[in-house]
Amino acid sequence: MTLQFISGGKWLADHRHFVPPDEAFAFFDVFRPQPVEEMLGRWRGSELPTGSPLDGLLESYGWWGKEFLDAETVHPLLFETASGPRPVDPAFLPVGVLRRAPRLAHSRAALAAFAAARPLLTTTRPKARLRMIEHRGVVTAAMVYDRLPIIDVFRRVDGRTVLGLMDLRGLPDPFFFVLRREG
Image (cartoon, rainbow, N blue to C red; front, side):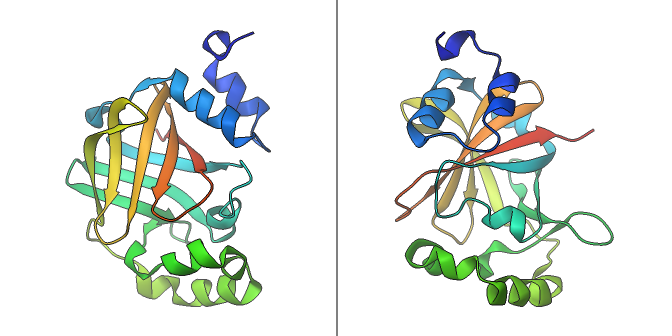
């Protein structure tokens, strides 16, 4: 059975614990582009493990998802707090460490430091924008971080689900994630 005939939701459920990167790319490439206007709203995030050194990282730090108020007003990282999901300024993320020493980012010390600093990193200002860009030969919605070398590219799985791919300069392995619309 080819990927075109498999339900996107079923495929994601069947692969929520692991999918080889080549299969994740093939699955990503099957789906239609996601228009910017259909990204608006709040989205709950989860990782799609592919063996990336970043697998498990966001969720271990309490990542909740993303929020798109309009094309110019995007909160790229919402983290769980006692009062609900709150945006965090990603400019303070140690991207160099993520690329060169991802194991350090997974350490207990790093998790504890982030937990202590997270209230200081909360922001109300947008930290990314939505644009249509070409990625893997398809023009689709993408979230461009304001101060980081990261672009998150989206493909539509269905009306409430998108598959995201983090394009981080210098990251040797892909990092995939899933967003499900809230409400």
